[in-house]
Length: 271
Image (cartoon, rainbow, N blue to C red; front, side, top):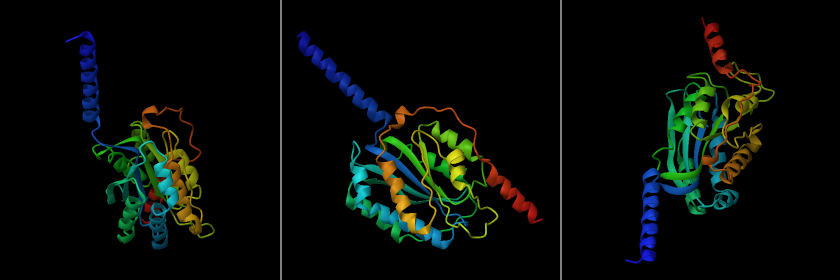
């Protein structure tokens, strides 16, 4: 065997080894984004809010702008899972991991969401939702350039470990957490657990990771638009999770344990 042919065989063998190593490491379908939609269905979300929220996701996945955002990526496809959450022990997978790479597959995802019933789950554990969502990536059959948890909610964490600890643990794994704080009751009498500055709470205590952001929902008429805008931003993002940078933490502008303290105050008032 001549030296040139030997060199070619060596190169071919190395390529095969790299391919095998990549398959052993990942072995999943290559996508631009692995996205967990973690949606608040706790008792504090009334029926109308839940209906608006679910319909907003259904409409979003039927919208041509969503398809365009998906097709703007390198692989032109994403993987999505839809999770409903309440307290620490209450998480429900509404739609399992699904590959979306076309208008048909996006509509099929929306169809499943549309025909399922609404549920209400007790308590509000943002930390439980984030921890649960963070555990859904490994072994899901996909290998994404980015991993994102998109968490919605209308109140602060009031059960389980501190939300900042759950956030920091997930972000350390290269996952980005984005938020959809729901503030739909301006001018109405505040409930015991309502937080006027929920958007600030989400910014300082909930979201994290490279390129993390919030899209607040401030009125019912714009609920669907806010959901669609948030999804487009997530699907069109270009920063791979492997390039995640660590940023120096800043002092929160709000008490990140406010939800737990409100719960304790409420319990004390019941005695």
